[in-house]
Amino acid sequence: MEKESAKNKNPLWKKLLVIIPIIAALLTAVILVKSKSGPEQKQVRETSRVMRVIEVPKVNLIPRAIGYGIAEPGIIWRAVAEVRGRVLDVHPDLKAGSLIKEGEVLLKINPVEYELSVARLQAGIDQAGADLAELEIRKQNTKSSLEIEKHSLLLAEQSLTRKQNTLKNKTISANEVDQEERSVLAQRQSVQQLDNTLKLIPSQKKALEAKLASSKAHLKQAELDLAKTVLVAPFNCRIGEVGIEQGQYLSAGQELFEAHSTAVTEIEAQFLGEQLRHLIGGNKIPPPVDMANIRKLVNIQATVRIQSGDWTIEWDARFDRIRETVDPDTRAFNIIVAVDKPYEKIIPGKRPPLTRGLFCEVELKGPPQRESIVIPRAALHEGIVFILNEENRLHPVAVTTAFVQSNMAIIESGLSGGETLIVSEPSPAITGMLVAPERDKGLEKRLLAEAGVKTVLK
Image (cartoon, rainbow, N blue to C red):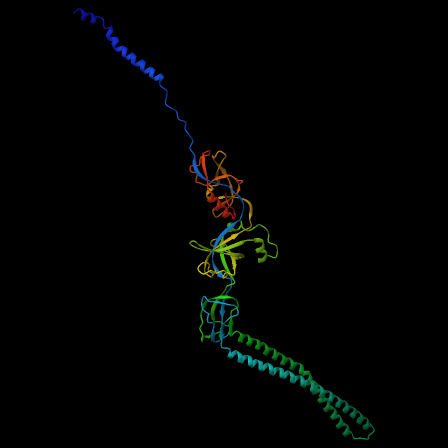
């Protein structure tokens, strides 16, 4: 009982039993916190974006423009009957699509009517010639007769003078003198008639000569009409639509067939003014203003091509002329280019002739523009391009565009060539952004090819 009362009277040992473990736990926690190292710090790395780039080229640019048009023969001969008559003979190849050589006889019309006309007029000419010859002989005969009659008149006048003198001496009667005087008057009348006849001969000759000239003119016309009964191919051609048959009666002015020249094919293509102004220089055309001076000054080269799937055929062409009007709807200029000898180098199944109706692409090329800066059109963002600096960081540059040609833009200012241009879409475009560049050689080759540069990239 005494021991229990002693314990109750001294509770300090119970408090120590509680406090000592708590203090020990706190000390342990402090020691652990101070002795434990902090979490390992990892350095944050800057990420880079992979983008396609090219080196901005400075080239001698070939300005180009593309237009489209339909091929048409340079010459279309629409044969028309110039004389009437029945068709006697037709060329066996006078059919649509056939090729005919220059000088071949295509058609013959019955010539009998025109042969008779020629013969009749020739006879009239011969008659007029004979009349002129007869008139000349009559003229000479009249002159001779006039000379004789004049001499007779002189003799009669002399006889009259003698008799008049004799009458004064009254050795002859007055009746004899009167008779001699009547003889002189008759002789004078004869001379006058012959003289009048000679004066009429020049006018008669002119009338016969006019008749002869008229007959000769009609003969030439008849001979022309006779020649027109035979139609000959005026040039190497390909036959179009044919509207006649052998035995058919033709009237003058009737359309017969079409023939298309195989020497030249023309294509009329449309180009906008902004396409053409970079092709044509700003030099003035010297007088006289004719097509020869215009072609020389313009100095445009042309290529005509047709495409069908992966099948492409090209012909060298020449700038021929500009149409006289501008299309009122599109405000485009109509340029006509010509392809000489379009039927040469035909390869069946591979290279057809450049025939009428083919839809063609026309490419015009102007003189080279030296040291031009060209970039892909897609790399231009509203007057801004993005390049890489020496640290491969994105940097925006403001540029001025001279003009746009197909898939490329020609830069007037802002780039000098040799810069590393970003051609990927940099969205979002953050200035100073780190870029991992990948050179797009395929795009560079296409860009240079479009600029007209033939080179091999390393």
